[in-house]
Length: 295
Image (cartoon, rainbow, N blue to C red):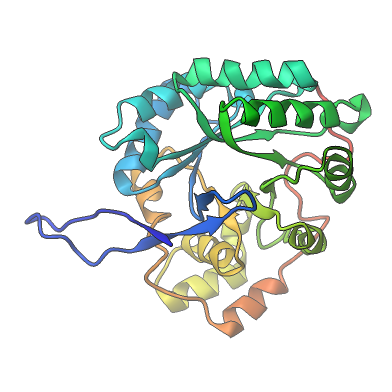
C-alpha cells in the first residue's frame, strides 16, 4: 500500500507521482513510512510548517504534549485542504502523567489541545523507569483505545526490559517504539526484540540532530546520486524498513526531504552506511535508562 502525494505540473496535468509506502501495524492499522516531525518547533511556527508539509504531500504528523505545540498542529490539521481521515496524527504522553488515570486524561488533553475527535496513534513518551509508573500508563492507553479516543497505541524510548514488562503484565503489545535512530546510532540490538514482537521501529532524530549531515561517507554517497546528505539518510531509513519522521521549518527542506522515492541506495551504499554505526557513543539525545525527568 502507498499514498499518492497528489503533485501536478505547472499546467495542472498530473505528473509522475512518488508514493509514500504504508507500514502495517500489529493491530491492523497502517502508518505512512515517511512522516513529518515537529520537535523543537515553536507553536507560532508550527502552523506554517505543518501546512507546508501537508501541501507537499506528508500525511503523517508527529507531535507530543511535551513539545507544547499541539494547538498549532491542530489548527494546521483542521484548516488543511484535505480531509482529516487522510491524515495520521500522533501525539505522546508527558512524563508527569505516567499512571493509568492520568494517561487517559493525557489523551483527552491532547485531543482538546489539537481540537480533534480522535488520534491515530498515541505513545508513552518516556518510561522514566525510576518512577515505576510506565506499566500503569500503558494500562491507561489501553483504556483510551477501548474508549475510541485513539486508534493505535505505542511507546517511545522504551528499552527491551520496558517492552517485555508491559507486554507480560498487560498482554497488549505496542504497535511502535519510537527511538533515536540514525546512521551513527543504528540501534541494531533492539531491532531483534522489536521484530520478535512485531513492533515497528520509528526513527526520531533521523539525521542525528544534524550531526550526520557532515559525515564524509554520506557526502560521497550523496554526490554519487546527485542528492543531498539528508535525502540519502532518509532513504537509508526507508530501505532499512524503518518509519522515519524528519523535521524542518524551511519550505525547501520540507519538500526536499520528501523527494526520496526517485532513487535507491545500492548494496554497496548500504554496506558503507552500516559501518558508520557508533552505538552507543553515537547517541545525540537522552538515555532512556536514566532519563527520569517529570515534565
